[in-house]
Amino acid sequence: MSAISIRTLQAMKDKGQKFSVLTAYDATFAQLAADAGVESLLVGDSLGNVIQGQTSTVPVTLEEMVYHTAAVARGNARAERPALIMTDLPFMTYGDVATGVESARAVMQAGAHMVKVEGDDWLVPLVENLARQGVPVCAHLGLTPQAVNKMGGYRVQGRDEDKADAMVKHSVALAEAGADIILLECVPSPLAKRITEAVKVPVVGIGAGSDTDAQVLVCYDMLGLNTQHVPKFVKNYMTEGRSVAEALKAYADEVRDGVFPGPEHGFEA
Ligand code: KIV
Ligand code: NA
Image (cartoon, rainbow, N blue to C red):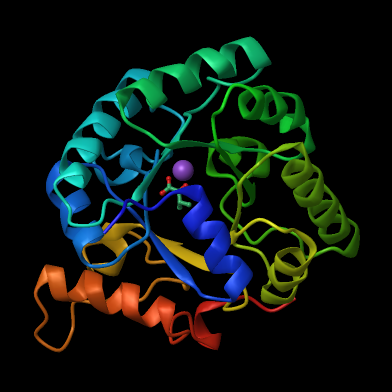
């Protein structure tokens, strides 16, 4: 089977088919997740939390993202149907267009197929530039963990009407600038639905309800390995005596079938 590309994911949105995204930080999990049917692997800077034991993603460096991307790319290449690899540009490595372009070059040359950046419409010039250079971009809005110090903690975003309207506007602007995916973290389910209907490109949600085109989770969370605070939007798939491979497949199947997330995993307006 041919590898998943951004065209595959766009076609899935256009046909109303849901797809799953899962974080991966190493070759073994990358191959397992791709073989389980997960369409996209996110080399997330959440590796700062789950691999390094940091309390936020702020300490993660570009060199670390390059190292993990290369490992994930090797494992993914062994899968029967390789997934689309998306890599986070880490904290303060894309504050201006030239810096962002250089950071994107590093992770793309390590094996990413797409870069992910956190922010709102201030990212438009970077997204336009990367699109012109042939680099797909995922724009991450809502709860943006790299900004935890400015947000004053991890909380649901877009609850005020003004903030919600702005998030819709910014998502549309980013998609029009050339972003190929919009990712929404911890936003009320009705707002995520509004954005999913407003943009042509696929919308991936985490803590954003069941109406987005796709879902993402941190793999250690859905394998029940989180020893810290377990967010409300997480579902543990290591139940019913499943193996890790079976748990990953159950996740991919439940997202595809619209079983996960349930109403209990989302946030009200
Ligand atoms: O780094 C990460 O794992 C992420 C997801 C939570 C979306 O950005
Ligand atoms: Na991230």
